[in-house]
Amino acid sequence: MRDGYGSLSAPQPGGTRPFFRSQQIMTRRTLIIAEAGVNHNGDLGLAKQLIDVAAVAGVDLVKFQTFSASRQVTRSAQKADYQTQTTGNKESQYEMLRRLELTEDMHRELIAHCATRNIGFFSTGFDIESIDLLLSLGQRHFKIPSGEITNLPYLRHVGRLGKSVIISTGMATLGEIEAAIDVLEIAGTPRAQITVLHCTTEYPTPMNEVNLRAMQSIHAAFGVAVGYSDHTPGIEVAIAAVAMGATVIEKHFTLDRNLPGPDHKASLEPAELKAMAAAIRNIEVALGDGIKRLTPSEARNKPVARKSLVASQAIKAGEDFSAQNITTKRPGTGISPMCWDKVMGRAAPRDFVADELIEL
Image (tube, rainbow, N blue to C red; front, top):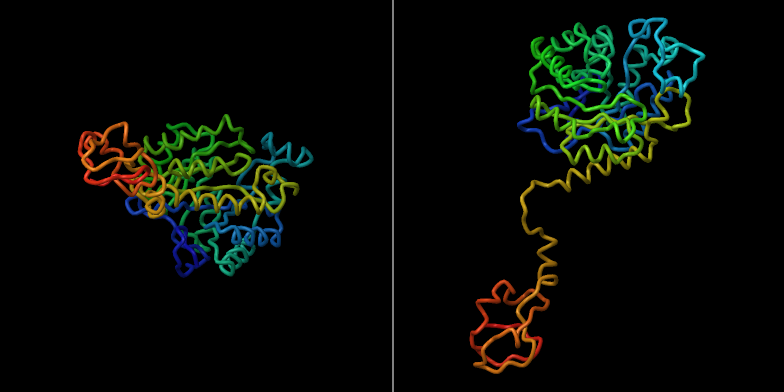
């Protein structure tokens, strides 16, 4: 079974595997999280189909959301504007979330289904009880959603577990990120086990509000591994984030953007998710090690593309080489044009015909 960095390992209890490494030994392979979220619409069968899609796409983890509506919101809490646009005003946020809860038994079925599809199960716990449920189900790594980054008792509870943690930072300032990291560290989670995701909490996120360079600012400010939780339309911003150093990419996906529900409209469809994962893997390879060197394929092309010193006309033995009888032409198998000054004025060792490579 794949772990978060692509090697094969046996699944741990609950179908989760270790997928974080210390920054010192972290490879350039990006952890790709396909965010199913609540796009299952409360339907276990639909949730399993989402797992199937994520497995086919080749991502590392498929992530759900674990919460209780009664612990998450008050009965009078308003929906976000995007939720009203996608689901209307007939039900409150509480009623909407109530329909989208996953029971413990549903969690167990989804974990088992992930194991059969060779993909890691992951879920965001939105409250302390949900964190404890995920822990009891075998989850050993935890995601703090953007809305909980200022929830002190919640942060302390997660920090005391001493596990690897991903923090989403939508709506947060650098000061709020620093405070959350400090709480986690004081509670018992080392900074080396914390990955911070830059994020904009709007669905979909307008391009002019992405501010992808903020991801690098977070890394510079706190020395943590960074990534990007993407809510933009399309796949290009997530791919750009990998090129800019993201170690984790999280992206919502759905079976169909036309399905009813709050997050479908801002999610990738199956073919797009697969294309994103493939593009990220290509970018990882393309980034290389940063050393400028002749590549194997370039070595084959070098003689064809480079030039050599060539006789531009017939040259007699003993005649001086000059700009009048020498030029530069392909192939690059002879004397390099960079030796032009060294060759000028020297006597030809033999006769040369026009277009013949110069020899000394």
